[in-house]
Every structure is written in structure tokens, then in C-alpha cells.
Amino acid sequence: MSKIKTKLIHLGLKKIDPVFGSVNPPIYLTTTYRFPDSQTGARRFKGDEEGMIYSRFTNPTLQVLEERLAALEEAEKAIVTASGMAAISMVLFHFLRPGDEIVAHRVLYGGTAYLLNEILPQFGIKTHLLNFKIPETISRVLSLRTKIIYLESPTNPMLEVIDIKKITKIAKANKILTVFDNTFAPLIQKPISQGVDIVVHSLTKYIGGHSDFIGGAIVGQKSLIDEIYRHSFIFFGPTLSPFTAFLALRGLATLEVRLKEISKTAQAIIDFLGNHPLVERVYYPGLGDPDQEEIAKKQMNSQIGFGGVISFEVKGGFSVARKIVDSVKLINLAVSLGAVESLIEHPASMTHSEMSEEALKQAGISPGLIRLSVGLEDVADLIGDLEQAFRAAHP
Ligand SMILES: Cc1ncc(COP(=O)(O)O)c(C=O)c1O
Image 1 (cartoon, rainbow, N blue to C red):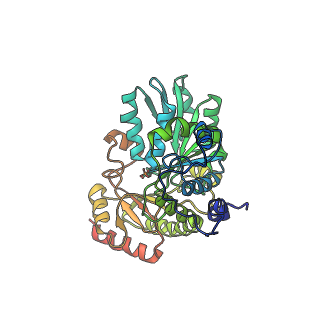
Image 2: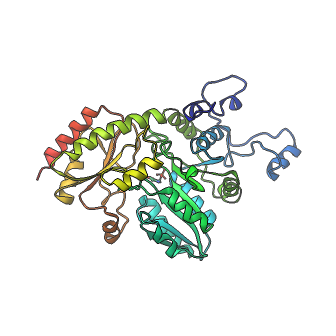
Image 3: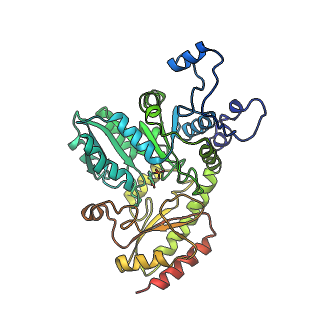
């Protein structure tokens, strides 16, 4: 079994159910596990023997998901968490101590930005926000206190691509851990092969793919994941439910076909938006900038596509943008992304509303910016819906 598409359907299955041979991983609803004898129980607690102890620690259904996620990221190990934010906060709180510093790209998912800018400082941890599109600026703020370089690519909602290799080269030269949020492009890019130490995911998005659960994951080399697991995870307790793990496994099995189809539809919508008189600019990985295009092609798999998130700026600013998102009939006015149904939202007043006016301006998130997450509906229906919403909003 060598190809990832196959692994995402079969990996770990024979081990989890050798008795009945079910073709789907069973959902293990158990809080605890019988030890055959007291010595085995003691050995498992000491870490001298593998085996189940208690479902806050792990569970067979979760282990299948973890094995497949590790394969997805070409990594040694994964742990799943109850949300993407649980994965991100777990990693940060595990590695950071008062006095430490973190360097991050200035545009991040809103929840992560809040964690870095508002919560970590309460624990004496300082964040430097920089423009990672100019990696040279990173070296200027690094010191012995810098413990983590944190980034996402493509960024949310501007879809900028950051040169992952350039960032990890700087991190490695300075012995700093890199943490990468790969929620926007699972399977499309493999950050660990580009030198990233830890990948975090919101499984809620493309991996789940059906807007029916919240989940997260932390992926990386065994020693790092084991350390997070032993010293933080089992005590913080952000455990995913086995029911939810089953849904994530179901999502993983169709990840590649969904991403290919969604990316194809996204291209048609980009063409429509690019030709519409009400649209000022369209943002999509690599679009309209040769340097960005080169980075996107280098680190993202164009055979699959660049995903389904498109942002666009409309002429007329906030009032027109609001009218458009209020006028769609088929597309859902809702935050989140990566699902079978298309979602539209207004970043400045919704997902990124925690950012200051100055930070929004610096990040290019204007009042006229709309974010669209393309789903699996028929492309003609999606374009038809956007067309009628644009007509309704025409000033
Ligand atoms: C890039 C990115 N990272 C992390 C998260 C947080 O994930 P969750 O909602 O599963 O906690 C999100 C949610 O929108 C996201 O878009």
C-alpha cells in the first residue's frame, strides 16, 4: 500500500478489526479498557507497553484516524483533538514559557491571531507579527527567546502563498521550531517535506468536508508528538469523540476527489468574477502575481488544484459587499470553509472582526472584501446565484 489515496481508505483497518473484518473502522464507545492483569496495567502506565488505558488518552477509532493523518502529512505520528483551536493552543502552550517569543505571519486565522495577540501576552509570551512574504525580515527579530515560528499558507482570507522552504531554512539555522497550519490545503501541500516541524489542522474544514463536526490534529515526528502527548495532551484533555473520528475518517476517504472537483469549480468562478464589472480584484493562490504563482506551483500540487477558497473585493466597499452576501440564495451566508456546500462571508465584520482597523488595513482586508468557499454544487448554479446577488447589490 504505497499511494496516499489508497492509504486514506485502508490504513489501520486490519489491526482495528481482525475478528469480524468490517470494512469501516468500528466506533469504540468505551471510557476505559480492562487490563489482563495488574502487571500489564502498570507497564502500560509506565509507557513500557503499548495498549489501551483510558479514552481521554486514546481510543482505537482515534488511532486509525491518527495513522491516516500521519500518512497524509508524510509524518511519523499524529494526535487528534476536539477542534483546530485545541490543536493550535495545545502546541503553543506546550512549547512556550513566560519570557519566550513567537514570530508569526501578520495574517492568520482570526482565532489564532487572538490567541497570539491577546492570550499569550497574559502569560508573558510576546508575539512578533511580520510579513513572511519578505522572509529576510524574520532574522531581524529573532533572539534566544524566540521559540516558535508560526505560519499558514495560503493565508486566510487573502490567499497569499508563503515560501515554506525559505521560512523553515531560517528556522533551522536558528534552531527554532516551526508550526504550520495546513487547514487550507491538506494533501495539496506537504509542509513537513518542506522542513516544517509540526503541522496543525482544523479537521472541521476540508478533511471533514461536510460541515458536520469540529475537530483538529497535531502532526509531526514521533518524538515531538509523544512529548506533547505525555506532558500536555493527556492533562489538558482536548480529546476527540470516537463518533467524530468516524466522520473525519469518512471525510478523509474522499478528500482527493472533493479537492479536485472543488478546485475545478473554483477556477470557473474565478473566471466569472475576473470578468464582472462590480469586482475590483480576485484573490486566489498564485493569481495575478508571477512571484506568488511560482511559489504556489513549487509547493502546492497543481494536479489536485489550489483549493476552493476565493476572496474578492467589490467596488462600492462595505455597503455593496453586505448587499451581496445578504442576496445570495443558494450559497450559505456562513463562516467556515472546505465543505460540500458553498459558504460566503464578510471577513472584516465576521471571521477577522477581532483585528484592529490598522491591522485589517495592513493585511489588505478591506471593507469590500468577500470570502467564498466553493463547494460541490453545480458550477452553473453557483455562478447563477452570484450573478443574481451582484444584480441585487448593484449600486
Ligand atoms: C486556518 C484555520 N485554522 C484553524 C481554525 C480553527 O479550527 P476549529 O474551528 O476547528 O477550531 C480555522 C477555523 O476556521 C481556520 O480557518
